Amino acid sequence: MSLIQMSISAAVMIFVITAIRAISINRLPKKTFLALWGLVLVRLLVPFTWPSPFSVYSLAKYSGAGQIGGVPIANVLPVIPVTTAPAAVQNTAAVVGLTPAGWIWGIGLVFCTLYFAVAYTRCRFEFMTSQLVENEFTIRWLAEHKCRRSVAIRQTSGITAPLTYGIFRPVILMPAETDWTDSKKLQYVLAHEYVHIRRFDGATKILLTAALCIHWFNPLVWIMYTLANRDLELSCDERVVRMFGETMKSAYALTLIDMEEKKSGLTPLCNHFSKNAIEERIDAIMKIKKTTVCSMIIACAVVAVVGSSFATSAAAAGIPDDFIYIKEDIAVRFVPDPSVYAKYSSFGITISNDGTSLLYKGQKIRLFNDPYSDETFYYDKNGTVNLAAVRSSAGEITGVSAISQKEAQEYYDTFFADETRDSNPEPLEDGKKYNMYYGAYGITFRADENAVYYNGQKVRLFVDETDGWYPAFWVDETGTADLAVVRDSAGQITGIKSISKEEAQNYLKNTEADEQDIERRAEKRAEEIAARYGNK
Image 1 (spheres, rainbow, N blue to C red):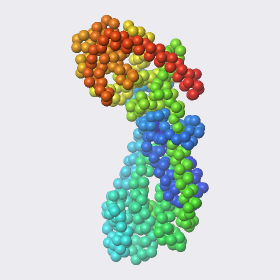
Image 2: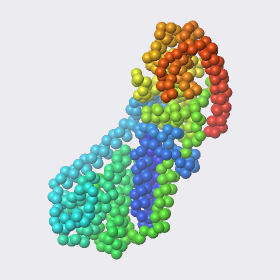
Image 3: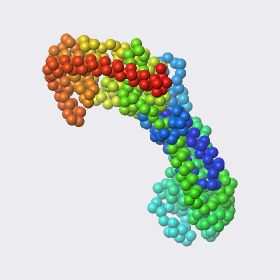
Image 4: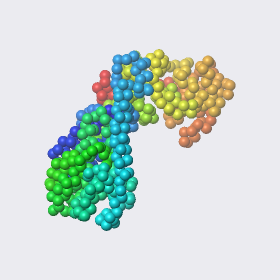
């Protein structure tokens, strides 16, 4: 999924959850909303999704922010908008990702990250001047509230309300003017902060901040950040009331008012008593009721429905097992196979939701070719980007690069050229493949002759057959050697062997029959795809 798709999908969830929250904030357990915001965080931070027949995007037959066909993993850079720029310029910009939108997003990300980092650093420097509190009350309280992590209670004159910071070594920071003799009020305050610590709310705040920095351009994410932080406090308030009993709601609410913070700076990654939405918190505290089985069932149902409906993508339609094509004199139509193009997904190659188009960072691909893969060739006359796979000397895929219109046309002409027994079924550009894959076994390709040699002997027929398909099939009637690749049970190449004239002739006959069969099946599959997706 692209960043824009992730953000749009999350925005829909935020809108729905905000509506649910407005209706039922005092009717459902507060943990319900933490679970819902957790789903939003997953959608904002995880660049892939799961298809579901219950997804609203399945019902709508369109997902603007869901899974891309059958390929779940994609890049997380902004979608590159389609422009009317020349194709060569457009392709280059797409590969390097230096678009205006990309620059704006990157600058916004840097500024947001610096803002929160500087704010937190300032707070940490101030916290470092705090003094450890070791009196009779704190020693007894810490002994009664055991935690696997080391918890410390400190105080400083830099704050006016309690807060908690730190994840692995959490600290409860109290104002310098704290009255350590008011044990009742202190029990409420420390219990609230203790709940934050036990729930790792500090880590949750870091994830919320990360999501906000990445999706700073989405106003609904800012709303989520605000409401999720409020719900962290409301959930802790609810837990404290459960700990001390509903009869102390009024006393706890008064403590909340009394400890309201007069903010002098931002503490973005700390949990604290805050005057932010103080009225909402007091109102929620006073309306806390005993959790019933019915409310728990409703809460679980809400999370399940929202998760299955909005956190998932449209269920993938039936995709053909292999890509198909028809010769240009009939129509040109490719349907990309997810299993073929999955290996390019980490470089920005994805498949459209209807399964009929190949995309690069949201743009339709016009032509995509991997010179070293027989099964990888794609063409769509309505696309705008021409690309080719890039491989290392060891044959590993290292990326994709833009190619010129001229190069794309050469690939196109070669692929659609009529093949006969007197011509090589492999294009000249694929000659390097023979040196790469078979060079260790005596095979060499001579580009100046457009010929394959085996230990100095010119090859007439070279066949590499595995599991019913041919990674390589070379025919040159001027050659003399008929050869076949030998593979072990695991499919690894173990050598090259000579084959008889009869075996060679059978390969040629089978190839002719296969070509005719492929063309017949291609026509039939094209008709099926056109009927399924409405592409005539």
